[in-house]
Length: 120
Image (cartoon, rainbow, N blue to C red; front, side):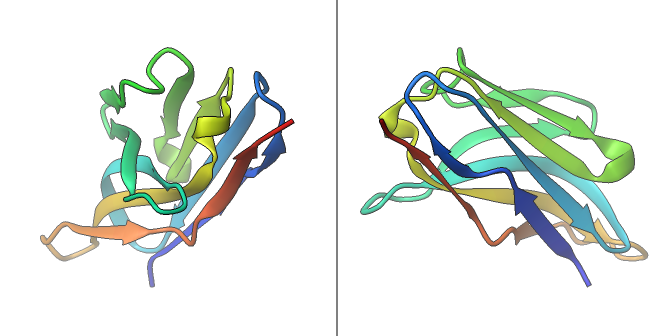
């Protein structure tokens, strides 16, 4: 059974920082891990992704403020968020594109989401 467990969300003042983490478990081989977010009334959008080799993609809105990293041995991805703005307020979802051992099909799995609120 594949599980993605997120942690680290919360309330922070503008200009503050938070670190999100997401640990994947199961008999799996992970290709790409990443973070998406969804604000009220908006579509879910890409925040950042990272491959097993360490190649990253970040959205233009967070490129200068957020950092994504990954510990392959722990199947864990992190999102360091600095200089947070009220417009960063959203539910943040972890994503992993992976295959179950002894299979060949890559599938997307999602965490349950963690709320990030940036407000004074």
